[in-house]
Image 1 (tube, rainbow, N blue to C red):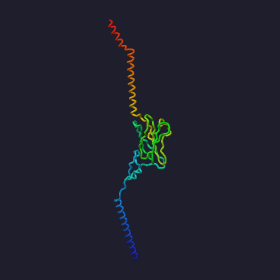
Image 2: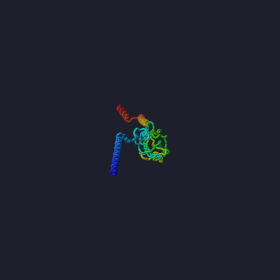
Image 3: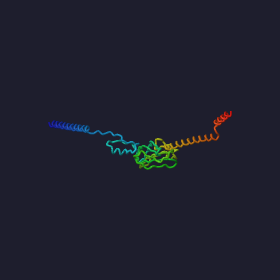
Length: 242
């Protein structure tokens, strides 16, 4: 009899524990579903509005801080490594004013500042003032018309500066660097005013030569006379004599 009661009590306790365990499990599951429904879906990361060739471009890390949505920046080399060379995209010459405008793209490296190097002839290059890391465009003034130059852009950080290909070559005439690198060779065209003056000078010389030829022709004619005129005169005189 006692054994039967003990068995019944054991079965009842087991059933109660199983029911409680099932109830707790279902409640937790229902709460988890409610959290999934009411929770916000994380937004996908997009690329930052960063263009490494844009003039006065804010650093990409600064864009990540001020943006309302998380954005991705292009991969850069380590800060303890010297930067890679920038890419000099173009050099626009302004012959009227005697200067050129250089436009370059930043390297995929941390950069603290830039500067320009200009070779005019044999010897050391001329170095510009330091330009901050947002600059992508700069003017080079005081260029002479008809002269060949080599212009390079250099990037620098705390670890060092970027390499300049062909820096040991003497003179722009011997420079044979890559066209898509940090340097570019160009020739400053003559000023339009100079061309106008040259055209006027050539026209003046031609006019003077024409005048001199006409004067010389008339001088010879007055000195030696005109054969046709003399022949006509003698014929008329002979007719009168007859």
